[in-house]
Amino acid sequence: MFIFKYYIGLSNINIMKFEKKICVPLLVLFFFLPLRAQKIISKDVVNHLLQEGDSLSDQLIFNKSLQAYKKASSFSKKINFQNGAIESDLKIARTLNNLGFYKDSFKYLDSIEKKYTDQISERPEFKYQIIEITGLNYLKYDFKREAVVEFRKLPPLVNLSFKENTARLNAKIRTNVLIASCYEFVNNDTAYHYMRKAESIIKSERLDRTLDIPKIFQRNVLSVYRNLADYQQYFSKNLDSAYYYSDKVLALGEYIKSPYMYIYYRQRAQILHSDKKHKQSLVFCRRSLKIIKEKAVKEDLIDVYKLMYENYTSLGDEKNAAFYRAKYVPLKDSLVGTRTEGIIVSSDHMNSKKKMIKSQYKNKDRNFVIVGFFVIIFFIFIIYIVINRKKQKELKENIELKKKKLLEKENETQELKLKVKEGFEEVVLLAKTNSPEFVTLFISVYPDFYQALLTVYPDINTENLKFCALLRLSFSSKDIATYNFITPRAIQLRKNRLRKKLGISSTEDIYGWLNRLDNK
Image 1 (cartoon, rainbow, N blue to C red):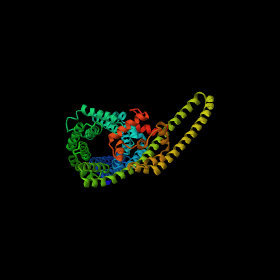
Image 2 (cartoon, one colour):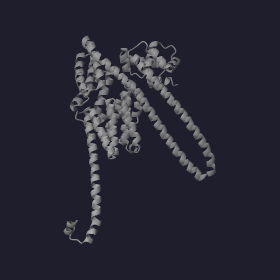
Image 3 (cartoon, rainbow, N blue to C red):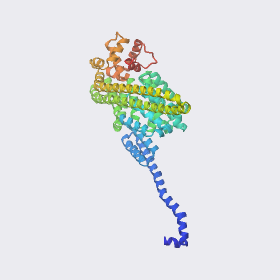
Image 4 (cartoon, rainbow, N blue to C red):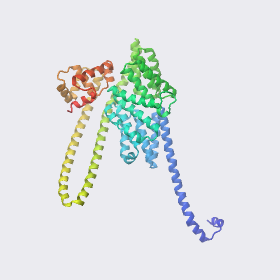
């Protein structure tokens, strides 16, 4: 301080004035500036961690990307960076879906919606991601009807969520792909309709004329061509068109070095198998298998082992056929067990959603009553007293009625969960092993459905009863064909005959019709 006084050559009085005018603001500036700089640096750290996680996710290294996203989430919450926390948690939920931890993914989504309600309402892109990931979780559990309900909420959000034209077009392509995936093996014409809508966007943007397309479009363009190849192979039975789209997938995938080449190689192997070119099919199976083992993708490993078993069987190579069958069957059984657990998890999530919606409506009703209360008091006080007493009585009765209904619903849910836990796994096991005891156990677990079915189809035989039971359990055409050792085409024909017998229109979902049968 003495040196400072000497340097500026001021008196003690002047120094005091100088300190008051200059030093105090400087002290404030030096105190808050590091805090502001620290916050900016902290946000940069969060963004860096998110970019690191995205890069790892693009390479399918999901375990490490999950760690990066969790660090970003933790860091965002420490510095109260809410948008960073939401974005991090959404990426965690998506990565958990990719890893197969759908229950944990649902938990993160529920947590985000409860903690950040205001931010989500202000940022439609967050709402878009929540709906998309929720639908993907349902889809992985084969809850296609619930998934399509979620995905149909996406189109109105696209223009609000994506301001840039390129991102908006890509979101439209992806939305059509997601909706189409819900109708696969259920209503294939509808699935094809949505895939063609996605393809029309690709053509309008001339993305089909070159391999050097913007990175943002690459994954979804590949999904469109891959799904169109599947449709041409399995449903149109047009192998030339299937080869055409498969060629596009392989060319673009290899050009951009896609981490999903194992899927595209497996698809080509399936087309070649359908074309009875079994040796060539095995070549692509081995290419796919090599990548799958590196990536540790369990579900795709099952499909490749099954395809190799079928190829070797067709070639008469019993030794290799037995080898790959021994690898395929245990993996398939473990997958069925995972999906069974998922049914309970997804049901809990749906019930939780319904309760949350009911709570929101109750809050709105309560606000409306309060506003009405003050309006009535202001205008007609005496009349209000009479009306208010009547409303209070009705409100109390309605609340009691709702409580009673809610209690009944909870009891029904508990009974359903108990029934699912005790009987569902055994029914599924008997179904997939094609056991003769399947029908008997199914009737004991689902007696209401059986009685309702007899009402509309009194002369039903055992085979048709078994087929209806498999559909009631929401098995896909592909699974039914696998368990009964027949082709998906034969299953589709049986569905058509059953529709005629039961009087179900071609536009109505046969799964939904059967599920509603015991509720009528």
